[in-house]
Amino acid sequence: MSEKDKMITRRDALRNIAVVVGSVATTTMMGAGVADAGSMPKAAVQYQDTPKGKDHCSVCAQFIAPHGCKVVAGNISPNGWCVAFVPKSA
Image (cartoon, rainbow, N blue to C red; front, side, top):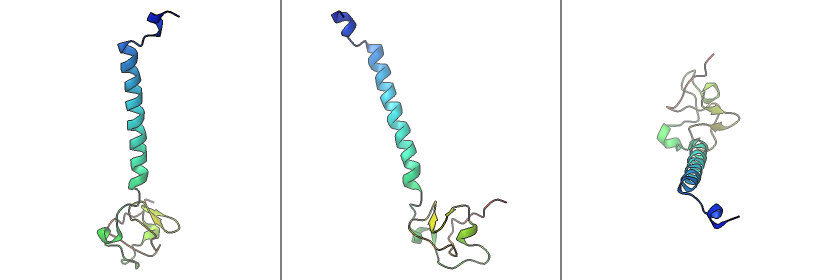
């Protein structure tokens, strides 16, 4: 292998940089979705441990059984309610 064959061309360097940047961006975006899940404090969404009429967490699209939520941080009651309530679609 000659010295010329061992040299990295500008095109190769730019291609490698693009691959690395793309990989980092994709990984960051994928991780952001996970980190944001259930990140709102209960007070910020006016969470309460009791239902509001017929609306309660266990019939909400955000609810993750048995005691989780895609929006609200921490354990929640299936009978609770907050302003992020979205009824599950039929």
